[in-house]
Length: 119
Length: 422
Image (cartoon, rainbow over all chains, first blue to last red; front, side, top):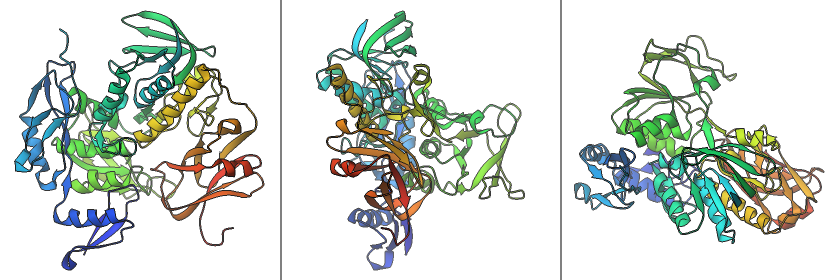
């Protein structure tokens, strides 16, 4: 039995998840808590947001995100991948910068558009 | 230059207000923004979780701002960036200074104040100790990291558990810093529960509730901080001190609406919100001057800033079209037991044909309590059961017109607990 707090909404239900009983969830006030509780113990995922190097724009960092949640255990590996990424302006919001990270089908995409800076 | 509507501030509040006024047929609108680009603080909030209410999807801050900037780009709203408003006068002149245009006096028929808020600093909370480098507000560190690409430190202690502090705990950890502790003077967190879980628990960062920093030590740079437990009176308890060797202290100790312009213009202010007193349509004490977003009261969710600012934009357009609501009958609103403030502070019945939404914060954590609205005679006008109430989460209730009509005199919004309630 594991105690976790549901993060699906601000209510923050305290869930008990029973690993030995097909990950049965109790303490949830809505069905979303059950889904969260089952996933969180079997395959926890998080959306990654960070920045990558940006050249030729007014500021030096481009905000990015994973297009879908990544396995929680691969978040720091993904951060290391981002260290190597450098993008030259112009860039558009939604542009794919790194496709199919770790074979998960999840892309790293830009979350802001930048025009090339006027020199 | 003369405009129908001048919007001061191009963050989420100003963007939504300007767009709403344009949609209502107001075609002479100008946004004045002091930064080099629109979007306000959303530009540095690169994390996700924005837009669940308004766009029904989870966006990052820059994406949320980008959507509104794109929407505004399809209108004829003029935008002045890199332009600072120095003064707003009661007769609706706006004094602006910018490198491009110099000093200008713009005239407006209606003004929307959307200046947002700023962070409380070390000076505002009076932490003892020396004055080394390495003490930042969380938002300043966020800007350095996410926009300038500059890490402010390697070993970090965060004071305050506001959402920006929690978000920065995760962000600094992802970028390789060691966040040693998050220290909160209150017995509960000031941030959203989901942020405690995904920003602190995910990275095993300890949260010390009922603790505070009693000393910051270091000569040129922060070298260590002393953290002590506090009693119910929030005073440090001798003998509970812990030492953390760190090079950085981030402060996430609250936000203050930025109202220098509002005060100088002579607007009536609410000492509880530190923002202007507003009517049901976000109009301030000066007719035709509206206010919305964090300049009125500090929000947790940008979606609610957007909704409130759209109300202000619609109201400004109506004002320019010559619609002014009757001043009476007027229902004043007060916060009672457990309620810190209410927005709006006054309801003009003439302008509440579809009822009105009230926003407020509670002063403590409650379980299974009721939000109760009573009038001057003590009669219960409405009651709303809530499983969970916390100061870190803004509450809202909707009062339908039929209930407002029942009220005699001022309304009090309060929290009631326990069984035998009538």
